[in-house]
View 1 (cartoon, rainbow, N blue to C red):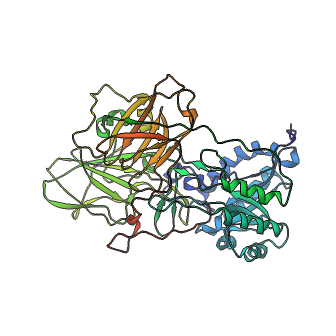
View 2: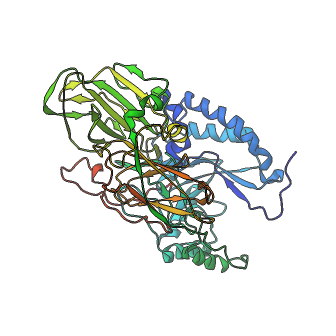
View 3: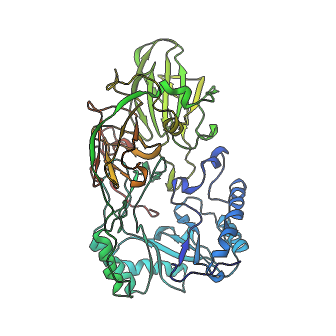
Length: 545
């Protein structure tokens, strides 16, 4: 029975392919077939797509507009023209699948940036374009007209701000630029969908990354300098946009909701729970996987988070000898330890050099962090882990144990274990767990976790994975903590940190009543492959975010 559309229910443009998420929203288990070609007419990929849509699309069908629902159109692909494949057989397959399962009445469309219209559009699908504030909007819409001669001009992703990458400056777009751009489009009679209208948060491991000549992991915050902030508060940009829209159509009168209550707390001192290596039997209760050469995350069915690689030195290394992975084979960040002592970091797209010594039989541990799967760029087949066998000098290291780590489960159910507490570890470096408890006053409110002096790691509050921090790189310095994550007044809340590198002399945190998103302490010099000296890449804009 078709639903009856409630009065006042907003009309929706639906994007069933979540291609803005890490790896385009495509599940990492697809890469367990190492030769699969994502977003192409590869039979293995199409089989997975068909299987999913044959479940999803029939559930959507009753909610289409002509069935009494509120879905007026559906997007078939997202900025496919920016992907390297340009596979029209794949696009035709998708279009046919949508038509077979949803019928002929629903409007199907695509969206692409100006440079992607050639490979992203398809006859029979309505072509839309996306771009941010620009002086040449008439020319940009003229490009849409080349591929869609009739029908409305549509900017399906009008960028109100921009995302942030670790190590680059916080992105903003001025209120004037965004409002003038909107006004100019509305004067042309265009339809506009704003991206983002409401900022968000990449909780857990879901930050994603971009690729354009180098790997660019995205920050935990997705505030985006949007009209409504990450915390759900109206910004001056929202009021200015409302004024522009009111010139073209009637809008509801009355005040907007006030900002949500915010709270401050701290500083709070954290205490050492133990080194990550001490918890290995809890983190990997099923035991390790053995292989002569290291295996990827995908090969051992570890989609997100961390995996520990372990081998032993086959001979004594007296002189400092370079430990390295050829062919940019660290995906994405490796924390190296010898007999439990932290040695340093190797990172994707870097020229860092790490030199080791050790006795024959010494344990060599490499903790690999998946920093986020590619969500935009020419390559979505983003395998994680050690993609090549590491070398010590010119000796290939073999006989590896892989420990897929279940850190979230440990934090939620096990920590703190009955281990002696210590304010300072003997060697305050390398992957270590810290925690403390706290209570809030009265009803509390939303807040922002500030980690001064900490380096890089992951945070959990009451077992919820809040996301990554990277205080030493920035620009993000605080993590958004929604009020519902905190227990009510009188109950104890638990915060746990996995610090991956260096602990500050005073292991403290604070909760602030406003975010700090614009403090880049160290530029992303690590991404330079062509220079011997550190240099920061220039900011870039990519369609799709």
